[in-house]
Image (tube, rainbow, N blue to C red; front, side):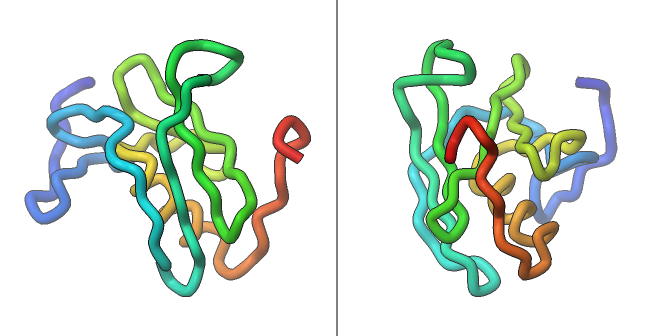
Length: 108
């Protein structure tokens, strides 16, 4: 990752990437802007690779993938990277702007 300006309050830079990199992190289960978001590590990653992470928004799975540098992307924010799945889920809620998440065909 190239050197970029970072927000000292959030520890994030352009695209939400963390200064310190990222691991999957702790499981989470919270209400964010009225939406129920959950996430936890899984034994199966994208296309059967190593460990992965599962994220749900109001009970519907959001497809997420971890990049080689430890950052995360989703189908909703595919060109923006996030330091943690929780940050990714919150951004997805922001981008949904009240709309329902439609499951991807492989998760329906």
